[in-house]
Image (tube, rainbow, N blue to C red; front, side, top):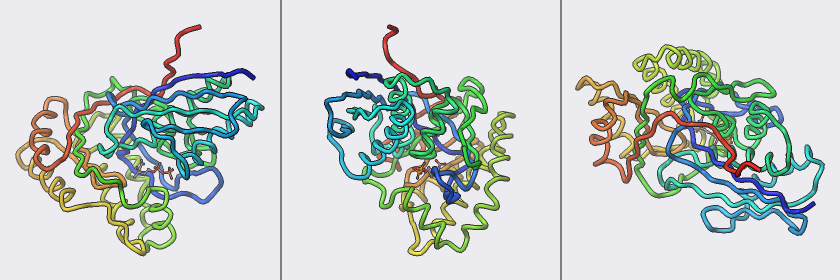
Length: 324
Ligand code: DP6
């Protein structure tokens, strides 16, 4: 086989209803349903070249050749697609984010979504978006959602694939990202959610409660009801973190700044601005608001953050190759 290449871009997503915990069946299946927004203006660009002359996969992330767990996760995804394509060719994967890694945005979601799309194309496989989303899910469940744009849901069934809920033009919502530190998070979400599952006394309650919140989030998105969405999204984030805090040893992603930002969002609401926070597996705070309030919200958060970015609903993973 000669060298076969493809390049794709994908954007990170932020979960409004959180996935936290795995069912324990094969294939990285979430224990809780989730709903997310794919964010515009932030992209991971990934090129994949399969080449018979390579002895092993190579993964270059942000200009640096990367080994260990990140390379193993890339190889695992490629192995699945190689099996489909009946090839043993190794690949060179080059991936770059156009947003700062310190922004607290889920680069693994956009990274695995872009990788799945590019590798599939490079191998000449014809997988539809649902099948592609399953491939991405097995690598990282949040990546399944970044295959699609706009508002996206992911379930808990054995062969779970993300499903689009509404397009990016459905709602002029804004997500103001307030990154509070440039340090890497202390524990990966994969490790943290497994520790939560095995040691938090609140885990069963979290899993039992999450579907109702996901339903609420879905209905609020479809109705474009910001207050309803915000109340449910804050509850999902707080319950996820409460469950993780109660693990042994406790998982504390927040810093003092995180709490100050929560307080600021609540004071914005007292001033009559509809702003609601959500927090993933890290200290950074993402704030949902109407487009017309985004600059006011951003100005208020800015003094507490190392960086703020105003984002909006964006597009799913797509191929960047020239038409042949
Ligand atoms: C808090 O998708 O990173 O962002 O499937 O183990 O790769 P793995 O985990 P990952 O977890 C995301 C957790 C979260 C919530 C969410 O995105 O739903």
